[in-house]
Image (tube, rainbow, N blue to C red):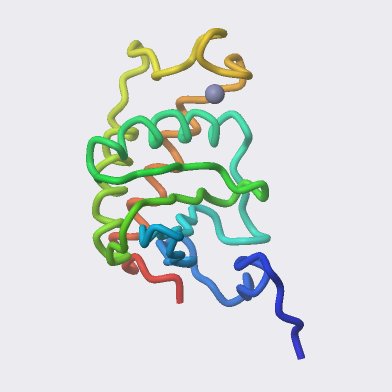
Length: 157
Ligand SMILES: [Zn+2]
């Protein structure tokens, strides 16, 4: 029997999911009654595909900036250490389908991002590794995410 772990994703069977997807990873209620939801926004099939750090970094900059235009109450969007997706934390509890729809709009913007237009935050003042970026790679993963969601839906399994 599998032992239960404190970290939610350690209890997820990564061999059973089908990327790309949006999955509610957990909801917590703070002492003041605020509800915070965390979503697993997966781009790559775990243990099969992985994003380069540069492509993922550019995706992070664009998604973190523009998801806030689409969705109220965004707390954070951060890359997973395994480089297969991102975590999105928001106030309240939205349906996964709503989150997927908002992310789709942001990723469509990424796909259409022109080469000549500067990606927000890509300079030595605003970023901690500003040379490690790959816009073409970010567009490619954004496009793969949209195609996957459009063909199979946003569910993880
Ligand atoms: Zn950065």
